[in-house]
Length: 154
Image 1 (cartoon, rainbow, N blue to C red):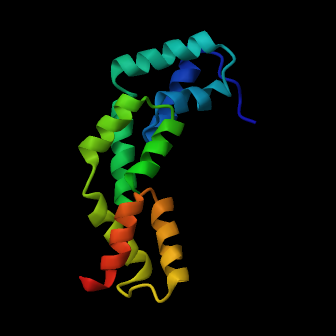
Image 2 (tube, rainbow, N blue to C red; image 1 turned 135 degrees about the vertical axis):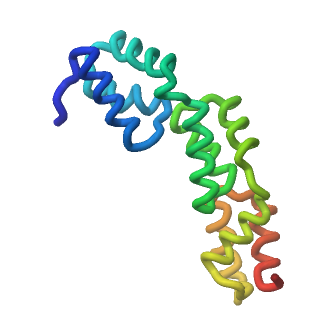
């Protein structure tokens, strides 16, 4: 188990170490650092200072995370759910999705082609498999259906 963080300097160093690797939401940082810090008030003060100094920003985290997930072939519904799990509010989530959102149908089509190639599904079982894949990736049923139907025609 990691050593307990007892002073402000130790907390700041641990927070910098986290943010040095990737962006984190405030809720994620509270969770990670809270396991190692028994003084909740000190943790809150340090995180408030990080926000005030611009080291941590939920808005920046939302945009970076959203851009990354869209780039990895995930749809808006999945990204929305993941951002909620990371402790972000609905307004911030919707703003990030609106700012970063590509054409969802085109993205579903590209994702389907990368995974399954240009051939249309051979049978209903394969069609269902592709549909499950796209819906689980966070695409709407309609976008997934259109992407599967238009796969081989482009």
